[in-house]
Length: 222
Image: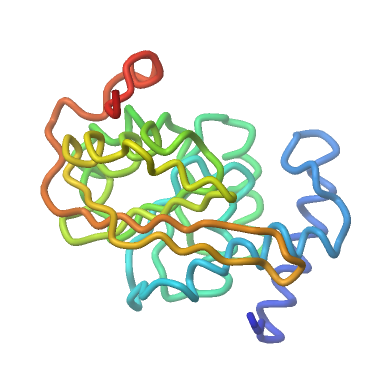
């Protein structure tokens, strides 16, 4: 069972109030019930940290962070981690920067498309962990995330019941990754989740990631 410290509870409650107020002008979450926010956002986000060995001080990039899930919650739960949050929607990044100031956090929130930022040498293969929660189908997500991960690092894909791993081998072979583990688990209320853990084995070729339209039209697993 996940246990939050008093300080973590304080920050998450403060985040909840800020998020729900901001949600009235920018669509951040459809979940507004307080109990559901804790279960489906905060507990859901933290669970992968209990299932993987993310070392102290690891640099983490949250690809397609949305309203800061899981990145902001990870920073609150594990303040030793160095978080970079990226999202293609400017309004979300504006919110995250205000939230960062409101909570006194240190993350770096960037307005960018992942397929473009991953070609930037400042960010390419610089992170120990890339994490994503409900962003895209797994083949596309691998192409958008693995280029950020340094060799030896991990890509963590947070999924629902369907792990989407069938036929994934060609994608991972092309991108330099390998499935290390697939963990099925349940949240306290019974919702089923899957964590797909992919290890970066070799450098990703420079032609990846491709433009998003090509990723969608010609997935690497075909």
